Length: 507
Image (cartoon, rainbow, N blue to C red; front, side, top):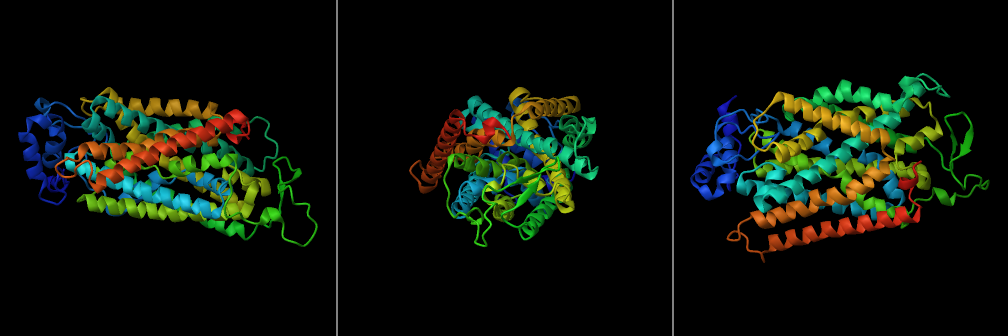
């Protein structure tokens, strides 16, 4: 390990190079801040080994032991953007055209913009809080703000959110992989072959690809797979735009059994006039609109990964990490909007909750869409290990807070998590239910409520009084998150109880 690299990681109140040693010395001298001693001291003196655990032990236990991850802060700016971008990007992009169909183009754009800006502000709050106390773990910010209840609340929210995310990714593997193999083999009517069974395939992918990647010690190593994953999603986006100009509306779809089925209820309009079902809606409200905000909130959640990525960033400063976050969010914002817009303008009101399913109703053997499916499968598969890291860290924070790095435990947690998620995916109803419930509960907590509340508690009153503008803004921010949560859950519960939900009935 290069000590110079380790020492480049700033801590304490200052965020400029050179201030970290002073900050750690002050922290060491202050027994009242005993809880933060190991983090600050180790950050400046040993390279911190932070990304997996950032655990607290008492001041007496300040030994130069190997912590959960030997890190040297060597991940480049570009790799960090790839990792954070990949953490943001995922299966959310497949549900956005459906979200646009249920809100209209203008309303969708407004909501997407608002959520993206709020996500960036939220990361600003997280980074400022972590800079003040020299802590780079979401759970430990919770501990610093509210003690054990704060740590447990953050840990549980991260675990729920990321298990939801991983489930949705593996759900795509389960639903898409069999169709891809079926199309490549030109099997019109499967006769129960095991290799066309999504449940078997999702287990094979989990054991063969995801588990080995999830066993790596450092998040930074996944930068290469993240870059490849993002390039797959760019290919998906280009294909969605291209197909818009190749699929006429109104259209007739071919089901997988070879029979022809009208996709559009108005498709029988014989006149030359433009079909009303092929005119995009600028604003639209219906029972499914309730899912839009959770899907959007879910699509921008990357907050559990922000601090680990910050920890591993080379020559890390708060400003540099904010740039990483802003670039990642801006790129994803553009990709999300274009994918939603062109997906919606291709199918209009007929678009399904999972966009790729709609293409297969047009032509199940379309070569381009088959390649897109493979690309999306690759992208979501390679995203799962990135999302698993914060969950494993959260579990270790909650269950083994004072333990040093241990390979058997590191492997066991990853194995148990993947086993549980596979069971969830095999028995889960459908992707919209996962988006809706997880997005409506843990996502607002991680994006809005926790960063704001932690910020209010952690930033000293001498620096920013409770009635200062930044803290008032943070309080309003937490209020918005709470409002989002209550509103989304209410809509979803009403929708489910009325029996009109596609999520409750399944496709």
